[in-house]
Length: 335
Length: 295
Image (cartoon, rainbow over all chains, first blue to last red; front, side):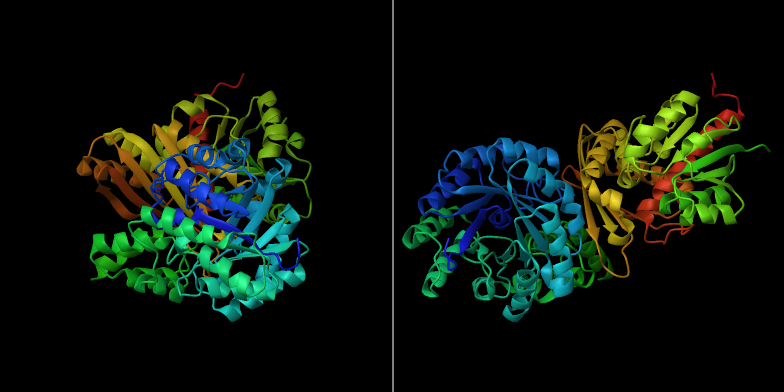
């Protein structure tokens, strides 16, 4: 690899699931995976939006099991690597081992930015299983570089090959991305990644800022599909990176075709930065809360932005989707 | 009235909180010995200052004492399985297990008191289990639960290194208890840690998919069991009454700690020590009535 190579991980089939209420069928996933393979994308992430065992009343029921998704996608892949997400507290080692048997190459273990120590058992076992391990520090906007270094070092000590700054709320501005990734780049031996959300329209811009600082592993999704206003749009990211002189190994026309011909026809709602998404970025709220907050607002007859602002004040973390109901209930009672 | 002598193994935060609970609330129980492995540990020193016997030589040092009948194990899954459980078994003593080892049957005092007492080693499930199993049980009794899913929010400082190192144990054990004790056909448990300051109270959202849509029966059953849990966990509070939407019932429970030793936000630990004390009291009552056989 040259130092100008940027590894792009497409998460249309995992984070993208948040944008479609986890409704992709295994067949949908197989078609999208084939298109990503044709475009020669390095790694793709697959599963429920909340990772292994994420299918639930709280986060939304997926239309198929983890196993069915992984089987459907795996058979379409040759050169492209297959990744899954695991959130300790939701998924367990049991599901991880099953996924490993189904032929995954990479596991991304995600914790809140202050709680890296819950990832120890999953990371160590993943290493024993021979998987590449990436650690996600979610909601990175809530803490500064000192905490990010401390928690990143914990993940490194558990065996993570890569540690990510994850802007789960799409709340970071480019300067705030730079200080966080720089902190990890300077203090960790392992590689550093960056995962954006587009709630303030900065998905691609923030990712490019991270790359300029020296990050060489970044996430994107086709058509920008994902939680909140979505992720960095893979097809734009690839083109912008090439224009800046970086290599990704991805075929530009084929990645555009994957977004345009394969993903977009499957979407009833195109990713967009609407007022609720901007409020996520403004208040620093976990992006996958978006559709749940819209639903609760409708049910209780209140403004979804009021729910989101209150969730931001209470500092809800990823996975606490049940707080939306609680907050909406309280707000509605006060009216 | 005579009281049954007891010992706590593990003078950590939980063991120390339990000590204060026995002092303040023990009706049939009294603390005799605090058992640790480090002489200078804070918990042992505290127990000594309060006038209790202490030992830093582990359970083996006191297991032969005939007058101590009930042991609380507040160590970890490893020490329970390897040392304390076998020692208690050999001596024929009752051991109430607060660790995730789960060798004996699960016990949730508001729900299944009766059967598990036939065993001398009982397990207190998890904090989330103590908080949510009663609700699932009540709804299952009233209308039948096909699937239960519980989401626990715990304050980060109330989750110790043991929980963090093996968070899977929490989800696995809680899920099993929701099925075996709660009565759900299938269950799922989720836990989240929140570092907000000031720390959040322990909160549990309980979703149940029910077999019969009878909101009145559900409400009556839940209100009744909440009163029962409150008897031994005063900070157990129904935050949102069960609400039926389609065939899904959502109920929210908040637990404020009693503040016996641990801070109030540690409702997750308080409910464990409160359930431990309640279990110990029920055992002690049985012993005093001559209903426990000591062969």
